[in-house]
Length: 363
Image (cartoon, helix red, strand yellow):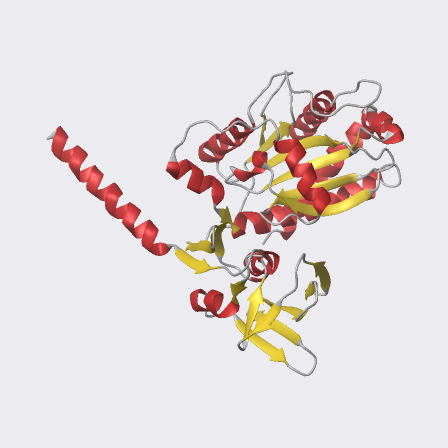
């Protein structure tokens, strides 16, 4: 009987795997810039429509929820009266648009309401549409103090370490949450000076998500630059298409201690695929935090804006997640501010207000 049950479960998992493979779609990419044809995207999402004016070279991709407009050959697009920059322009060839990765991502994250899991692989864009998700009601906040233990992170000229400042702010934030929103469970990925692998941090977050339901993940860090004049805070959400070269370098700096464990194919696939729903909500969360931090920290610490990059600590998270670079320890004045308790309290309060605004705006 036991053998029959094992065999039955084997068949169930086998056919479930076949169904999952069939549900995924591989769209070919073109050139080293990984362009995809709009008609290939539209085949999977018929609600998307396009238009093109050959006289002005202005194109648009429309969805019932909104419209993205761009000029062929230009490195900008507009959405909801906001102008966004992309690394390479949209092209028009054989009566169809060739979309670069950043604009394809914008379709999934900014324009469409569907939850699309997607990943750029060699010569293909692999994607699948996930079932619709219920609206969030936050049950748990995961606060991740960056670095720790044998990994100090960056440091100021006088020895103030990133790991210490991140933990100080994390503890203040936890106390405020417990006072203002006692119904929300607050979990620190590290409550003391302990080294935790980056992938372990997202595992802790996902475990809490499974136990409690809807959660948010906030990772706290300090930045550094070889240019001592660079300063300011910035908020990141996960993306395979970094906003800027600086964003890419920041991600490389924060990812440097990751040592992947295990070689499970399924685990690698899950870590590689991105959910547009989680990205969409992470982007809203990042913007809400940036707005509140700007109100409370400027002019002491200026905003460098909301950015996107491929952070390992965010990649495995199954919930909306952001990484907060609170300021530059390599900047003499800002380094002193970040060590100041009153400034740390301002950061914590602005994060709480930002999460409150996120709750109102996320849907």
